[in-house]
Length: 225
Image 1 (cartoon, helix red, strand yellow):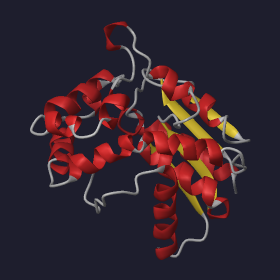
Image 2 (cartoon, helix red, strand yellow; image 1 turned 45 degrees about the vertical axis):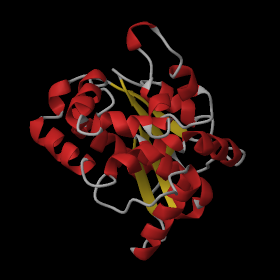
Image 3 (cartoon, one colour; image 1 turned 120 degrees about the vertical axis):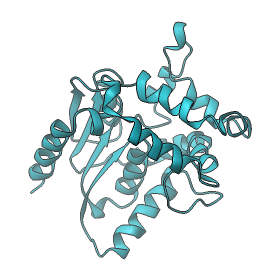
Image 4 (spheres, one colour; image 1 turned 60 degrees about the horizontal axis):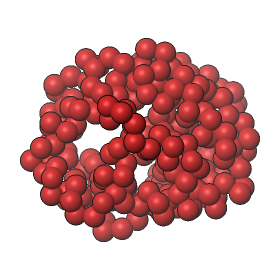
């Protein structure tokens, strides 16, 4: 989605976690606090579940792990489009890519406004940056690969969940989006989960409530020494 490489495969939970493990190793870190927002939390979980000795704490911001039934329930159709319809749409081969090319700004604006408590938190400069990144050659295709791997990732999460995480986990959802669902989801895969709902924020907690998020993360890190 940004400016890193865009391989043809490797968008599943296990591979994403292995990528972060290799990155942290290359940077010389043996023990890290890891924070992920949205699909970043899937990579963070993949790291913590496969390499628990590497992760001091895990923080998941506005994400529901695949394969556990929580997100899948939210994907069920409801009146007025009040459900997470795009998860299934993005996983369809070829068609989303064909329909979304050259409509990136229109499409992104929908998500930035619909899933926000304060839509003004993401301004035009931010949108221009995200659109430019997504219009690079291969970027839209690569971003959709994350959704195409959703079902394989779900199988992997169910398998990894047989060994619950033991490090402290902070799971946060915005008042206008996932709310307490994020914490409930991670309680299925971890023994020590804190967090809950961040008030006056939607899906975009880092932009809508940056000071509150920073405070919660500092407290979370400090609790692990």
